[in-house]
Image (tube, rainbow, N blue to C red; front, side, top):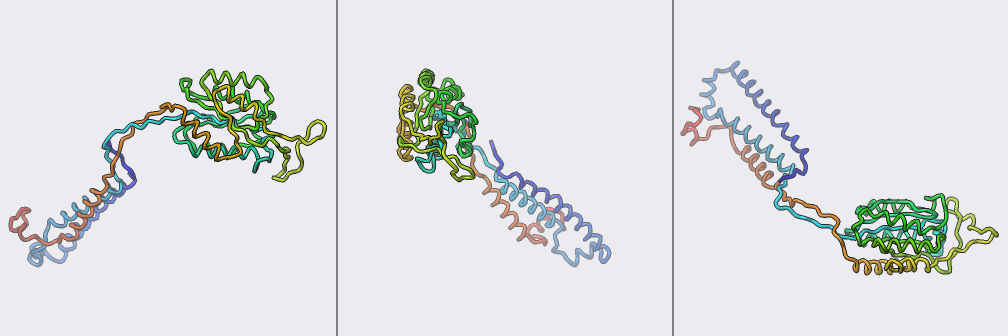
Length: 345
């Protein structure tokens, strides 16, 4: 098997027909011009050492040199062996809470940005795992399907905000339901759903029931709590400036607090763990430890041909031919002339 790195350099070969055309044009022009002033026999007597063959030989050599250099620049690669590369990992889906309570600034800069930074930091630690993203508030919607493209994942991650869903509230059960159907391989047992939230939940007991359904399908849920137990008001901003704070029906400022109870219950019902998300380094270390405990499954095996560059021999040959062309004179070679191989005498 072979592979060509830069086939565009084959266009250099189009110069050869032009060189040959110019050569023959000049040869014909020289002969016609010479006949106007001197006969061929007299010319042979005046320049007895001139070879009638060397010019054509130099043309062949320079053409072969151009061909060799062209192939060298194209860099042909020859396949030396077939290698099989296996990819093993875990399917991970991040469910990110985008309800308005995630705008609370009890943790810098706010809960939603902290959640996004946590996911980004976790992505930096992954190697061959597949990942997906779900966003949810009063309902859940897919943000990114299962993929191994971490660059695309981070791009979609940055676009997440609390204005994505018009229906407000926090329905963690909807996020879990979507997560159950989000994994594209039903035979994949090592599946993990990360829920990043402040723990406020409006579904109540139904959330635990849905979590148990996820556990029955072999899905572990890891909950990461974002925010503080003390909490803070939910700002209402315009152009980045706080205009007011969210208020309840009585006109009192709403204080949003992180609730660990529901998040811990969800994780425990699926043999997962709850993690305090305020310390990024702690989250990373904890997740790494938990992932090491989970058996990796092979989900992709590809065969690759190992190629080796072969441009060196072509370039060396090309420069040698060009050098030979430069040192060959258009006069007869004495020992060749004595052999009379080309009937020049």
